[in-house]
Image (tube, rainbow, N blue to C red):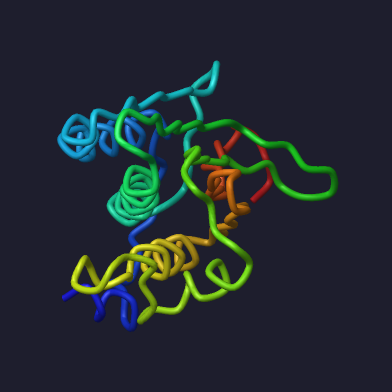
Length: 175
């Protein structure tokens, strides 16, 4: 059940995975909901192939949950944007960032704080159990990633998942 995944997620089995494949799987999975809501899904992929070192099923599920949240936040006819890019940061290893952005109502600081509580739901009573964000955060965290949410009332919401890149072993390097 969904709450067990939050409490005791399956141990990740990481391998090198193309971020493109993850984005394609998510778009395929959420397409029915997007068309039901008359929402546009936009996807921006990195110019050069990027591979991450993660459990593919975990990351697909985490990005899918963020995308479903974004689709629910958007008014009918809105748009949700998925973007993946390689991110170089001074003094730390390069990472891959996956961003899910909507132009929905956004959240105030109190709602955002509570959004990661496994038993809080911003939805009306009876509509889902509110485990989307906590579950996405947990799946990302156990794959050596981070999930940050940037939002404000009237400004939409932007979830950014940062993931470890798959490191290519170069021939002749000392072990």
